[in-house]
Image 1 (tube, rainbow, N blue to C red):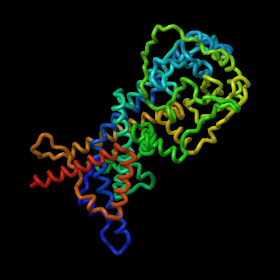
Image 2 (cartoon, rainbow, N blue to C red; image 1 turned 180 degrees about the vertical axis):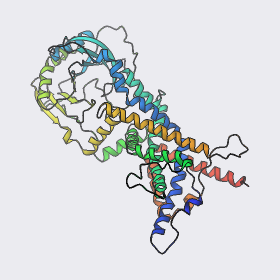
Image 3 (cartoon, one colour; image 1 turned 90 degrees about the vertical axis):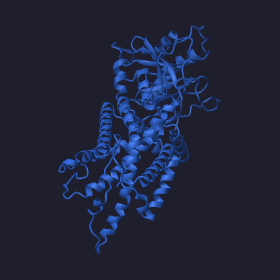
Image 4 (cartoon, rainbow, N blue to C red; image 1 turned 135 degrees about the horizontal axis):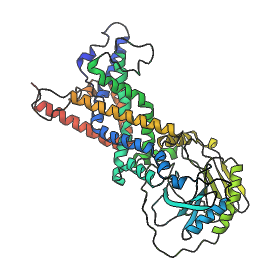
Length: 503
């Protein structure tokens, strides 16, 4: 995105060769500068459009929870006051409204004024989708129903926005755009930081504090460039975090991330629902499977219609399970489950799994498993016992979704996305202003930085860079393929320049 020129005059700005050790070190820094310039240029030109789309859709995705709360407030909020009905009574009312479906989970109202979600397995829905009946906890009367997605319980609007950010609603092929953007964002940002630090070091005057973060407005012709670099540094930490968390949800690189996490034991742990002495199926029928955290944007069938089929027989133990919910919920709260949680209803003789939800402003996800007939805790998993990397992954996902610390998280993400859009627009504007003004072609564009950066780079730096590029290209396949494409384009431009030299 940064389209600054790498011209010999900048080499003269370095200290002249002397007997001091400063000159070799300066030349060492300059060996990386032309290479960083050229890679930053090509990636900025060809990949920035994908990052721009991801930034715009990401800004909408960041505020989707707030929009959802406003649009769906008739399902999520109630004005009834007074004592709450027993949880089993609330669930019984929902089951009576949907007797043909299988009860799989219950999310009791987390706060006063919220509704209780009673979740059903609906064969007409897709993967990771469940039907939720929303119940007024004070009157135990259903207030509506909707399809919800994943462990975060996204309603149709938020799920649509999530899928739009993830794949532009183009299905699996559309995921390539977001993976390309997430995979390249950290590369472009870090090489841009290298260029910015080099430029800042050349300033004749430096402020006592904040010299790295302040644009230099003393040069009118370079103000766009300085704003481009300064804003890039401001948003750099959050951009890197969004890039890393975005890669974990990608199609191809995401598989490599999963393999790496499994090999290093960084996976998210889960509570065991096996009751001692009883052979059980630990996976409840109809439970949502969404991997480590809620994937941002699997398809949601918001307008799914239910066929007019005869109600299926109610499982023999379902009424017994409903009756056990009150004891299970009280036991869970007595054992540290104090935040909004979801109770998974087992299909067989397994224990109930009670796990805290990822809600705005929550930082821990504790879980317990409780035997329904006896009310005994059979397993406990405190968030403090999670592996460090699993905790960081959970926090990163929550931050990416705008849920880690509520609406300030969403405001910060929107600000970062607007900053990223500004950086991209300024970069393209600088590229346009660098085009030849006397060119005979109407399609003249800004020239790339001077060639030969790799040949002029020291082998001690070139070899590690090539090895690192190979490793990154293997781990992030779209980076590897596009990097090869940049290399071929660069060769083609070089051959064209030799065939038609500029006089």
